[in-house]
Amino acid sequence: MRKKIVAGNWKMNLTGEEYRALCKELNEISLFNALDVFVFPPMLYIADCLKKLSTIHVGAQNAYFEDKGAFTGEVSMMQLKSFGVSNVLIGHSERRMCFHETNQLLKQKVDAALKNQIQAFFCCGEPLEVRENGNYFAFVKQQLEESVFHLEAYQFKKLVLAYEPIWAIGTGKTATTEQAEEMHAEIRKWVAERYSQELANEISILYGGSCNPSNAKALFACPNVDGGLIGGASLKAEDFSVLVSKETWTI
Image (tube, rainbow, N blue to C red):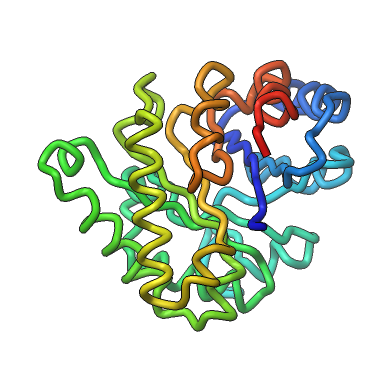
């Protein structure tokens, strides 16, 4: 059975006082034991979160593909590994849109993560105009082809995929369960075509578009949705506790 995952992306939020309080609250919530639970804090907080969080995995929101060098402001996969970080987000829609990260750059980041034994949570998804013109399958497939489908099967199976309908992030809009399941099933089909049905059945695909306590149960019940990459709802322990509770899941 493929892993069921809930991952909270804190983005560029929380002061020092706020994240310390959140860590304390997260340690007190009950996690459904069938889940793998992650948080991705701002880079500044990672080392402390690794110490403070006892049952939740801690990852990085971003990293550069070079191991070291004159890249002011960047942090490398090798540096993350040296601090005990074993998970990283790659290709988040905000990195693509705000910082113009291309599929080719993301390919280099995926390769660097795997080289350093770091699991990549690879994000893909379409903007509103692509959804409206009906080319969303081709758009997302191209992202996968240009960034991760070059990997060998043994490498690809180390990834977690996350589908983010960009038009549903931070907008209050959410893909319907039918839209989410349709894209997740299509992604799994492409993986089967590129690699094998066995590998496609093993890979976890998360939904990442305004998933919250009110819609999580329906989304997580979709056959090809293996959990969520959570934004705003991961900043409040009360909301996050609902997403990681046994009652929200039908495993």
